[in-house]
Length: 147
Image 1 (cartoon, rainbow, N blue to C red):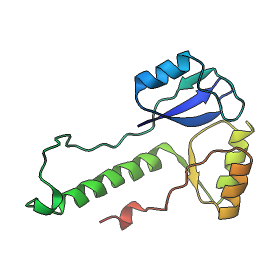
Image 2: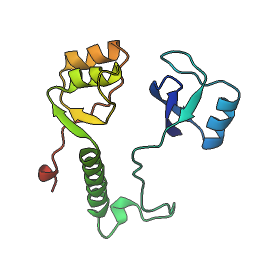
Image 3: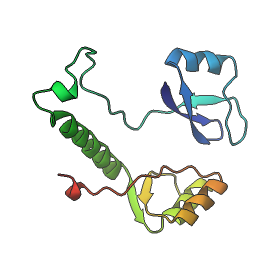
């Protein structure tokens, strides 16, 4: 499955899951994709923020338990996680505990749209979801805590 970031003509953002890029194109051409917020069928793909993939695509690679260096996959995963965390930090503004308020201001076009990060309570996250404001919840990971 491929996950695409999508947007309608009213700039409502959402994601869609497809078997392939051709499957997305086919469904889009037939008007089968609609915005979950406003039902518009005028949909476009947005650039993906980040893709982290495996360095090896060889199906006959040595299984982990037989690998001479069993720590390599863990080190590779940690490196990938570090890359993701660095990308999020470098491409977003930290609004701290004002996250919910700032997300609302962006959603309701009270301030210019920009990528933000911060902290929010469970109640704040639920309220944002109830208002149709999509957020991505991630665990707090500090680069200095990654070995």
